[in-house]
Amino acid sequence: GDSVTQMEGPVTLSEEACLTINCTYTATGYPSLFWYVQYPGEGLQLLLKATKADDKGSNKGFEATYRKETTSFHLEKGSVQVSDSAVYFCALRDNAGGTSYGKLTFGQGTILTVHP
Amino acid sequence: NAGVTQTPKFQVLKTGQSMTLQCAQDMNHEYMSWYRQDPGMGLRLIHYSVGAGITDQGEVPNGYNVSRSTTEDFPLRLLSAAPSQTSVYFCASSYSRVDTQYFGPGTRLTVL
Image 1 (cartoon, chains in turn orange, yellow):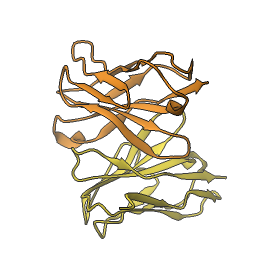
Image 2 (cartoon, helix red, strand yellow):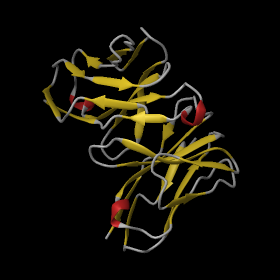
Image 3 (cartoon, one colour):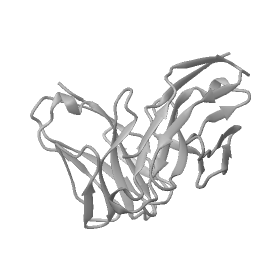
Image 4 (cartoon, chains in turn orange, green):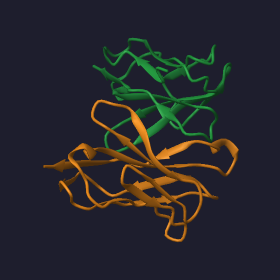
């Protein structure tokens, strides 16, 4: 079945440092890929998405590129801020049809803490 | 628009008690779903619905019931709570199963 693997956390960075959170996936067909962010005490919000190979999703200074050859969707940001402290989830959506069609599969989440 | 709302925010139950977690959305979304979030495991799908009157099981449905009598509401029922159901529960909705899902703020449930 589908699966998503994220790098182990937690990740602790100083403000203005570079961020990379690794995400790899296993899926049949051509899934859509997502990064969700969960700020303390809140629900999940969509951060960015990519629906086909080589697409780049971007939002709020974060970027991720859909790499089908390496089955990866790594999240990057060039300069993090304290306000970026949150839990980040990589997810895929099955587009292959059948009983799993449309279902989201999440990675385990990566806690990011940014210090001033 | 209130978006996706969930009540209660926090709940403590004793083993064997039953309760209903409420979820409502005001975006006229057809697709609604329930997830549970456990440390180190991400979110796992419990049940989902593609429209009023239609529900189906997700990855971890045991111990939970759902119904969808209206487009707006999608309650999750715990029939006989167990400590293994201690978790944070999120409801989500979208126009269809392939559109962006919007999440509620969550309900933190503790079963003693």
